[in-house]
Each structure stands twice: as structure tokens, then as C-alpha cells.
Length: 338
Length: 288
Image (cartoon, each protein chain N blue to C red):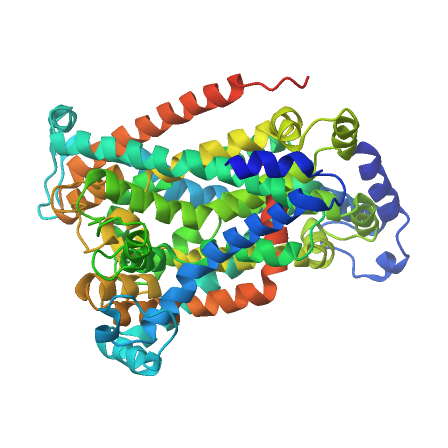
């Protein structure tokens, strides 16, 4: 950087004689004025170099601070109040909302549903994604066609996905029950039960996200040195052994990353339970598939902002915990390749 | 899962191989591709039928002739033209803004040296992990204060920049923009802004285009926040679709005609530019 600055000075110093022909500045004359001008330019240049980088990254941090971080922190403040949009006064109630929450069976029901749907959708999805990426990570014909088709569900909006799958999971005329009937399985009312509704919702999530995560894993796999596989092949290691002993240990940072982002995504599931079957903020008549995010939305529609904020904040703590546990687990399952 | 083990045993990841393993790989991938496309195909089938045809066993498996009629019912039921216009406007503006600000910040992080740049970049990446959806209630309160509820400002302004874009462009520019080019620009007397405008921005174009597409798609598909802050009278496509689905549950022909219409533009764009989009996703992922 210093050498760079020196270059710049030299360039200015040896500038064209045109300088001399410019009108003299009011505050000086001749040689000293020229030097001052040069000094000023150097100063502008220094300021430009020092300030510009910060100016360029500022818009991002401003927007994030105003519309990302501040609302999140403010949630904690709102959660300590009896806060409704209907009245101007917001009474400070301390931890009352949280106390209510602890004894609120709807809240615990939503927490259970969130964990259940989260595990059902994430675990098989990631296993499938790793396997598919492993299959795609070799010379294949129609490689691009496969990839594009795999990502097609992710281009579909979540609303569209739920509407489509609500039809597919229909009790009387749905395609899925029709196929199941070939195997002698009677019409399943997917919405009605806890287990069946969780399975249906997890299917939607898996359908939308497996292809995306496959591509992320594939990108990581392509960065694994080829000679590792060649050596393993010569040693007679099967494809599955190679996946287990080479690929998975080598892409572990990516696995950690995907596990964390999927977890965060799974905890925030809202549209699927809201729109599955019939639109209901309670997630079915018996709340059999109401998630935490949906419970927040239910309280929001009741304009009970204080309580909804308390649920949000609990959910935040919950996410941090789940991510920490996941992180620890994924870090611990070390491969044998070191 | 058993097929995976036995099939994989014969395949070699590193070179083309023939035989059972290879066939099984193709079969598996074709099967997965089939199930990826099936729900979309079937939604077109439903959207092109009338409801009496749908209430039959076995269900219809090929498209019928009612698509146009169903689509015109969509336009009669919800303000779908307005929704399309709103979505194009919102997604277009967000994508443009994200492309610009991400390239700007990415240029600074990748090529300018300044105190704390490393820490700020790490901070940027960390913010990707923050579940900002949880702040949605205060965000709504902010919009009430600004009197932006029910308007498109509420969707556009918070989305003007994002961490993923900054990270993505930083990655790209640190690889694609040679330092010598910038030095040469400096020697020629370019200001930092001049370097950005004349050197970095042209070099960033391919990656910025991919980022723009990804941003457009996610803005087009965004649902929760628009649902909270907009009204059914001035919706985006997703809000209009959920109004359709909410009010006319059993009328699948109607809601899926809307769904098809709302998804089709993206699917077409994606089919044309899918290769680039996939390249972008995979590039952004490598060092994630």
C-alpha cells in the first residue's frame, strides 16, 4: 500500500505543465500555490482511499441494522409488555408473558410439532441429498438436465407447493391415496392425524429442498481431490466405502453449514401448516400440525403483539440451542480421514 | 436404500464405468427427476380440468380443455393482474438493488484494503445465520410507524441488500478481478469510485446476473412478510394465491390454475437459464 501511495505521488509530481497555465488560486501564488494544490489532491486521494471502502459496505450494514437486527432486539422489549395494536398504552408486565408461556399447552404443542416436522423433513432429506450428490459426482450424460430438473421444485413457490400437495394428499380424490389403494391401503385422511399430517408436511419440505441441498453438496464434492478416489479405487474400496471414508469427511464443513441452515429453516416453517388442506392459523382443528412460527402468526392476527414477541424470543433461544447441538454433533462425527 | 449399496459397489466416482452400477445410477436419477417434475405436471392437469372431472376415481392423468376458463375465473376472483404487476415491480427492484449494492460491497471486501475489513466480512457472513423472520412483529410496528403497511415500500426497502449477495460478490470478485487492473487504474488517476464503475462493475457482470436471478426468484416466492404487511386488495402473486387457496379450498381447479399462472414465468426463465442459476448456487456454496 505504501509503495502504491508513493507511485501516485510521483505521478502527480511529474504532472503536465498544464498546471502552470491554470488561474492562480486566490490564497496563494506561483510555486507555493501549486504545491498546496498538490497537497490538497493528495489529501483528497488519501480520504478517498480511507473512507470509500467503509462507504461501500455501509448500505448493507444500515439495512441489516434497521430491518434485521433492530426488530430482533426490539422483540425482546415488546415481549416484556402487554402490547396490542388496539391501544396506545403498552403496559410493562415484566416476565408475565413468559410465565404464561411456560404453562401454555398450545405453545408446547407447537414446539413439539416443530421438532417433529423438523426432524422428519431434515434428516431423510440430507441423507438423500448426499447420496444424490454422490451419484451426480461422476461423468454422466444429461448431467445438466438432471440438475435442472432437481432444482425445479425449489423454483416453485412455497404457496404453490402447499396447494399442489394439498390436492395430491386429498382424502377422496388425491393421487397419493389412489396409488396407495393399489396396495390395499384404505383412504388416509392426511390432515386429520398428527403423524400423517406431519408426514405430509415433511414430504412437501423435502420435495422443495432436496434438490437444492444436493447441488450444494455436489459443489463441495467437486472440490475433493480426484486422486483420493483413484487411490481408493486401486485399493479396491467400493463406491459406498468411498462415500463414507473420503467424501463425507472431506465435505464436512459444507455438511455443518447445510445442517445449520436447514435447521434454521425447519424451525421457521409456517406456510405449509397454514395452508395445508384448509387455511387455518391453528394448524388443523386440533392444532395437530401448528408450528411455533404459525403460533406466532396466530397471536399476531389476534393483535396480541406482546405475547407473540415472547414466543418469538423463545423460538430464537430454541434455534440457538438446536444449532449448537447440531453443530456439536456434526463436528463430533469425524471421519477416519486425517 | 439397498439398491444404493449394491448399485454403488460397481460404480467408480472418478471415471466412466459401465455395467449394473451405471444403469442403476441412471435409473435412480431418472426416478428422482420424475418425482421432481410430477407435482408440477399434475398441477397443470388439475388446472385444466373442471371440478367434476377431478372428483372421480381414478383421477385424471392428462390435461383437459378447461385451462383458459379456469384462468379467467382466477382473474375474476382475485386482483391477479395487479398481483402480477406488483410482484414484477417488487422482485425487479429488489434484484436490481441487491445486484448493485452487493457488487459495491463485494468490491470493497475483495479488493480494497481497510482496517477491520476481515472482521466486517465475518460479521456479514454471520448475519446470514440470524433468523430475521423472528423480528417480524417489531418490523410490522416499524412499518405502521412509517405508514408503509399495505404498500410495496414495506416489501422493497428491507430487502434492498442482503448478506448472501455481498458474500457471493465478494467471492466472485476476489477471483475474477485481477489486482493489476486496479493498480493500472490507480496510476491513471482513477478515484475509488472510478475503479468501481469502470473496472469492477463490468468485470462483475456475469456473477451479478446470476445473483439478480436468484434474488428475483426468492423475492417472487416470498410469502410470510407480504402476507403480514399487505392487504388482499393490493397483493403480490403469492398473497393472491393464498387468498385463492384459503377461500376456495375444494376448488382445486381454480387454485391450481392460479398456481400454474404464478409459477410458470419462473419455470420458463429457469428452464432457459437453469445452467447459469445452478452454476451460481454451486459457486456460492463452495466456500460456504
